Image (cartoon, rainbow, N blue to C red; front, side):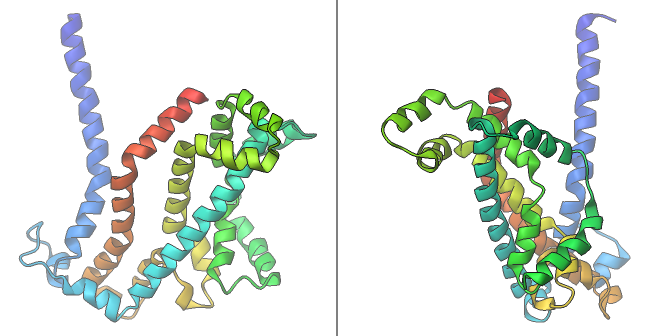
Length: 281
């Protein structure tokens, strides 16, 4: 086999695998979006892939009868709180690890790195619930946001890698001019690491928006605090779930659409931040 023919064969195989992965990834999303515009009979009995007539009333029913407006607001509130807390803590920790020297820095970095490969999962939910109960935070979205903010070692290492790429001469010049540690962090470091800050914000938003287990546990006693991920899953166990698959598809689409829009808007910044981080690291 000649070299040119071998390249063609490998190219065909490569694009076939890429196409297969894209198909299996995108198809469930498209199916949910299209299914949300079908009647229940069209969705359950099969037939044409597209609806005969778009049933926009499925969304109206989800918002007016199933309180999805409140669940959507809960998801946005939880995601915004998580993003703010994540950016504050991870940027400060990343700056300290990437720039400052202090006793135990090596040990702390090793512990952060170790935590990236160990997941305690649901084992930690009970002690976290007890802790938040003692702090009187089990009946608020802030408590869930605090839980989701923890365990962000990957974000800290991303930010610290960017911080290391910022010339230290800038810090020294600012220090000579009388700037303290916090002022250097706030006025010099943060503006220069905005690309990775945007990436971390997107990661935090996606985590909070899609999180199910933690949100389910911490909102069991107050259904009014449920985010969309929990509300959509609970539709499956409601009294009419077996007869209302089209409403479930509409609920799933309501949860999908914001993330799709955010990715469509922030796609270039996200790829640029990750690429710049790979070069700086």
